[in-house]
Length: 136
Figure (cartoon, rainbow, N blue to C red):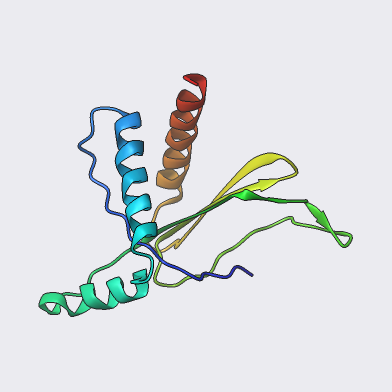
């Protein structure tokens, strides 16, 4: 079970010249969200839904728990499967540290996204992540 105490919406436009510029722009938005965290994402979602009577979607969630470290074996139980169930989310991406390794998961709605597309996206994600890490 995960507890979600705050929601923040971040916009993304694929108009940046480099991945580093994209990361910097996204990081700037995150810091701005932290600055205004009293007005959380639930309020933003409700306000966006009311605006012009248009029902807006925010179909991708990224949960990053890199600051927390988990053990694969807890009280004698091993995690063999991880599944998130958030019906309004098309793609739910988790980044966690388990046994000192980064573990990523992608949960998605089968009826909305093709498995081949998810496999392609995960492959690209890994390629970009490796490229970023190799430049540091």
